[in-house]
Image 1 (tube, helix red, strand yellow):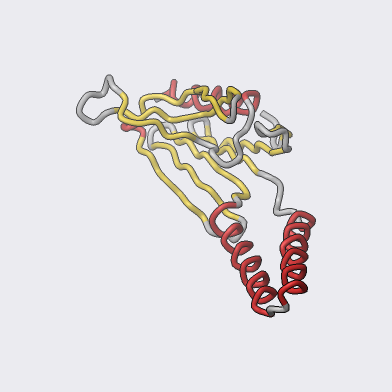
Image 2 (spheres, helix red, strand yellow):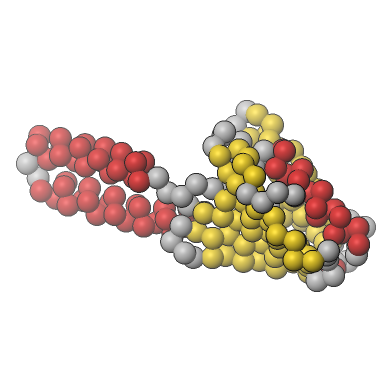
Length: 181
């Protein structure tokens, strides 16, 4: 599989899939979204400040301008720290388990590890999202009391939402590793 192939998400925006083969039973997949756009930040900031200036001009209340500056700064910080994900990583190690990581634009990271003994399978599922059918990769977890039934489903790449052609590449690689276990 070639590194850094270009794919698109469900909205048509370009995303990148990078695959690293650490060994025959260990692979790492990283789906990256474009960085935060300075043009979009400037556009939103100018819009909020323009509305605030118009309200200030009509009311002559300086608290409106101070409030607009405070709201945009806090809003940008919250968006960068809690919402905007730069890349999502899936690391699958055949006999050990699966690690799912998300890296936010602020540098914050969120990581979850799932032991291989808890994994029933990794599948591509479909869902209805905003009046259309989308596909997503997910991990099916075994029920601890009955290994033949499912206890829960863990969706992967929730932020980047890659299209089916990208998911198929990751799915095929994951199935190769799961077949070796």
